[in-house]
Image (cartoon, rainbow, N blue to C red; front, top):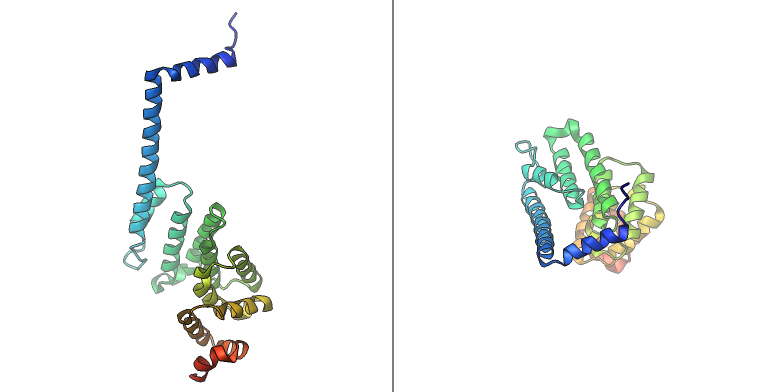
Length: 227
């Protein structure tokens, strides 16, 4: 009658085999090959992403072959998802794709949602979601919730300032009173170039009076007098 091999004896046999010089060498070579394959995959994805970002969506080039390659050779890579979403957003804003605009933006939003799930602490994916929600004319409740998520996630991330403030003035009336005040407080500490840019955005949406009346006079006297 046959009996099942003892677990301890099986482990001992495996350990003994690995301790043999030839077996150890084979294991090391296999591990080295595996590491080389992983490094090659990372390099290939990075290269494909680099070249994919050189192409801007257009009516003549509505597809992105390099991006297709990056998707094919990667698995749940948030930067690949982010790049595809960016490409779809570019495409959605072209007049040639006006009829598909909403569908393309919704696809982009879904991709950024997946990127956020994979890399939840990277605020720029959240900001891209917010940008797409503005383009989709999201309702005030959803807009406020996303703004709050961005603020809470990275309250001191200065790289977000320019685009976050731009989006805020694009949909200023959808913000809560507290969020509006947070944006104005932020505007007080941005560099002059960013301040001037945000003011030009506010002018575009007829919101320059918000800046001129609610920020300290010393801060706005020059730019508001010129208007």
